[in-house]
Image (cartoon, rainbow, N blue to C red; front, top):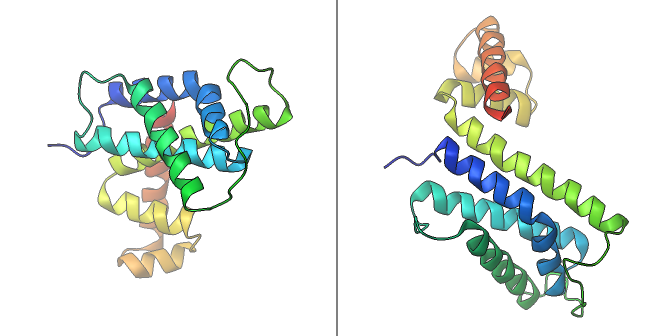
Length: 174
């Protein structure tokens, strides 16, 4: 069984997340979370749904939007139970007009979706390219340190990074 999502499954999840972002954020807010916490909650829900999809834990007949809403609701409730930032429940629904915070939330949710998609794309890279991307771009090591850590030349690190960036760009472009 493959641990990587099918391109169609990833695209469906992206469409569900983008179509439901306002409702999901409002759902998390209705559970008493602050805007930033609501966005984190939605992102955690997206990651959980992606993991379920990758591991085959999601029933093929299940509605991804309903599953995602359930996950977000449970994550929000658990955060409140653990007293991350307990706030009184607010009457905040998906049909209310967007204010500045909601627009900011939508931008943050879109960035979270891109992050999940990028994570899936990075997992598709070969092992050495993943290592180079992790060290150079995420841990911000310089080329010489990466070359020493991986036992390859600095020029080969540059080539691998270039190829990885090209592959990631192709993967991220719909």
